[in-house]
Amino acid sequence: MNWWRKDLLGLEQLSREEINLILDTAIPMKDIVQRDIKKVPTLRGRTVVNLFYEPSTRTRTSFELAGKYMGANTVNISTGSSSVVKGESLKDTAKILEVMGADVVVIRHSMAGAAQILAETVSASVINAGDGIHEHPTQALLDMFTIREEKGNISGLTVTIVGDILHSRVVRSNIWGLTKLGARVRVVGPPTLIPCGIENLGVEVYYSLEEALVGSDVVMALRIQKERQKKGLFPSLREYARLYGITRERLALAKPDCLLLHPGPVNRGVELSSEVADGAQSMINRQVTNGVAVRMALLFLLTGGAKGEAIDTGR
Ligand code: CP
Image (cartoon, rainbow, N blue to C red; front, top):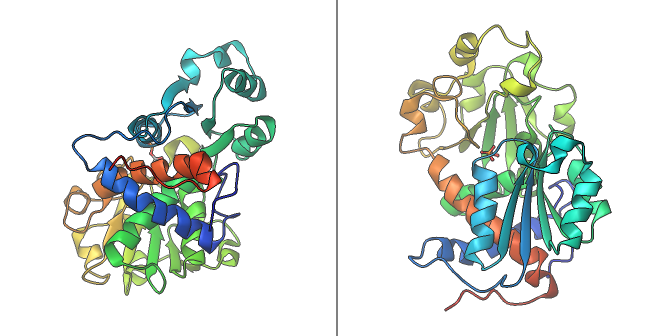
């Protein structure tokens, strides 16, 4: 199938076939990322703007590298050093970027729906790099790429997602994506961090981490989002770590070949012990590498790939 969408706003809208197209397109992109000379001309003459209203290390840098590796002009705008601090609106900022010639705008914003508003405002392609607690589709795509790369297939796997389910945009995108690809998804965390009705998205809800881990093929620990927390949802970070932190002993309850994922940044000693974060089952560094490949695939599909062009890998 050919890609036809202007924007990538979330995984809720995507079909299984579209998700697989992105993951398949990321395979040759990873080959480029792993070369000594990481440069192909696929996006020469195109302009990618990263518009980040919230902090980011992995997502912003990997979009920048993804654009650069494919020959695009890449520009980063962080709100602290832009006219946003003078009161310029999101829509006006977007229009400015468009008339300057942006082909793709990558946006991260604290408001759910910000990427959708941007997509309706500009004719450039818009990629959602995280909007409030709504979706973070490129994170889920790189998570699925990593799982598929290691396990061969996602269908039939049991994936357990542990932590702050309530505030996590990563979990929402992963639930949409993983269930569409046939995984069985479990969510586990303190009752105050599990939103009412989450089981309607097709997941199983657990409150005991030990029970949830048994039989898991993949464990994904989420970051405790201190910046989005209201006070009092759990007693303390120490108490959270005692009940829901992934340690070597707890990971041993899952299948012996269970993968451990975390979107980062990791609060060591809270979500993960350092021993498991740096251990043999940890996919954390692989996720970051794969994030560049997946974002290259999306930039390709939303620009040249949208017209059915072949991937120019420079070979
Ligand atoms: N996983 C993730 O979105 O990380 P950053 O906030 O560093 O982009």
